[in-house]
Image (cartoon, rainbow, N blue to C red; front, side, top):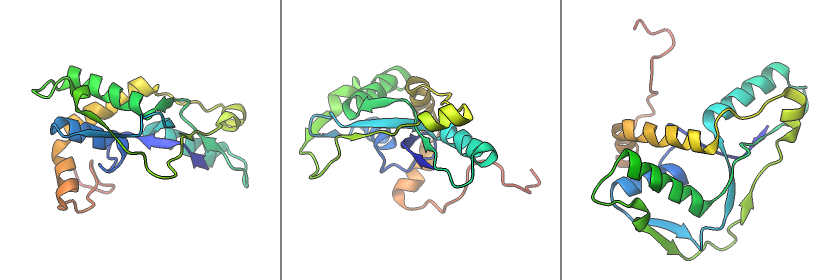
Length: 172
């Protein structure tokens, strides 16, 4: 399979969405490359997992399935949407969070658009994402707000690759 940009809980903070959430909460600048016109297709991680299971169960051996979120968004729109959710869910002295957006020189060779044609998996296996970008982003922002301690451990180097939740075979 091939997929578009994943987002959701437990994504490490160097990626756009968690980086913006955590920087905003700390009142740090939210750097946007160029004018933020780069387009990405966003796929919630739970939708990606559902699609992978479907391909394993019903996909044809030897076939390649593209898994896309049908959520093409400009980077600036993603950052502004995160800021609006944070204004609503975690108001602070830094609000409006969008005031933290700053524009920086674009990276050389930065792709203007990453998107994927997921029509084959929809047509052949009947898969479509459950999450809209808006619903998935809201869940993602809330997850980071609820798990700031995990984020701190990842950022300060004390993260020991422990999994969240109950381990298989646990007596709990």
